[in-house]
Amino acid sequence: MSEYLITGIVIFVLATYLGAQLIGRVPPTLHTPLMSGGNAISGITVVGAIIVAAAGLGWISTVLGFLAVVFAMMNVVGGYAVTDRMLQMFRKEEAK
Image (tube, rainbow, N blue to C red; front, side, top):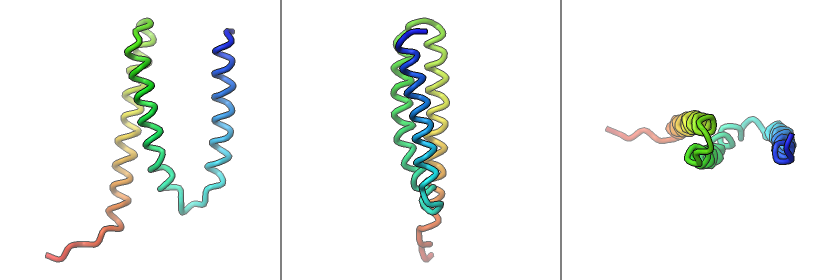
């Protein structure tokens, strides 16, 4: 295995562990705002996926980059839809 692959795997495992520990310590009342803030992270994922897809290092890289763009955009759009629905619960009804 290459040095870059091992480094990437170590970073992935550490990020997964730290993320699980941090999310586990957040009070339940703050989970929805936390997930809404996670949409910004998904936006960063979209940018990275576009860079990978555009690099053209081979057809596998292009296909995986395209799939990453599709799934990250589904996450972003779904997250903002849920956030909008959550915010509508707090809006006052206008008198007609």
